[in-house]
Image 1 (cartoon, rainbow, N blue to C red):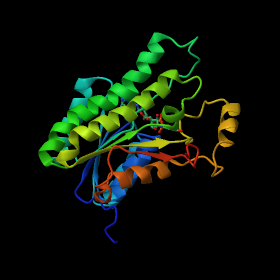
Image 2 (image 1 turned 135 degrees about the horizontal axis):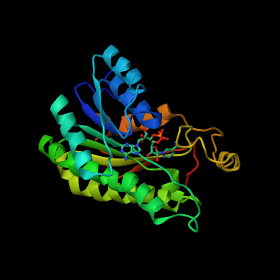
Image 3 (image 1 turned 60 degrees about the horizontal axis):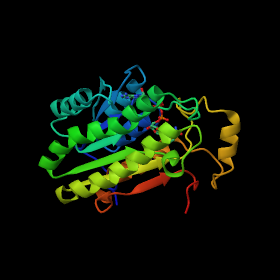
Length: 252
Ligand code: NAD
């Protein structure tokens, strides 16, 4: 059991890894021994903490400015990881945005913006990484969905659709690549306090809290733990699944 969830020698690409849940994922994967390539629309000082953690663990964290909604940018991210580390074993499609409003007020641009980043962005990165993973006959892809994609959330027709779309993408791709030693799974977080959720109205937060059997918000590190497991050797027999990390909110 000493080697449980050890990722020594593995290489992970984490999109949206500059802050929030993505940064927690990058930090945990590097603590387990993986080298990381972070791809984010903005790269700032915040990734320094992950680089310090990595150095302590004898690993490296590199970062690159990308827009995952653009295929050539997503492809460049995977190529940069290949150039830096020689392989890509793990892809975490974590980059995500919201543009919440009721459908009556939502613009076509609000819809396209969210779908292009959350869903097409994940597809772009999957498409770019599948070839090298197939050659290696090894890969772990983890898509960050959401409780909103499973249950739907008023004011989030765009976001809920993108996150539900990720579930379909996860299952379809899992079937396509299973014979090559590649697994594809999704993690569906509930409510986690980050920059993404800061501005949600207090009444909505209070209402959501009542639906959480464990009676508290989740932490980025708790989502990261689920991602790390699905990215590990030990999860080899799990594919096409959606793992909720939501304090029991979506219990069925
Ligand atoms: P966050 O806003 O802190 O982080 C999102 C990151 O994605 C940011 O660093 C941002 O710069 C990056 N990003 C945005 N657009 C990008 C693009 N086009 N290309 C590359 N990077 C881009 O939010 P978070 O809460 O840490 O969310 C991380 C993921 O978890 C998202 O997919 C989100 O939908 C999902 N999620 C979050 C919660 C929550 O409660 N926080 C719940 C369920 C799911």
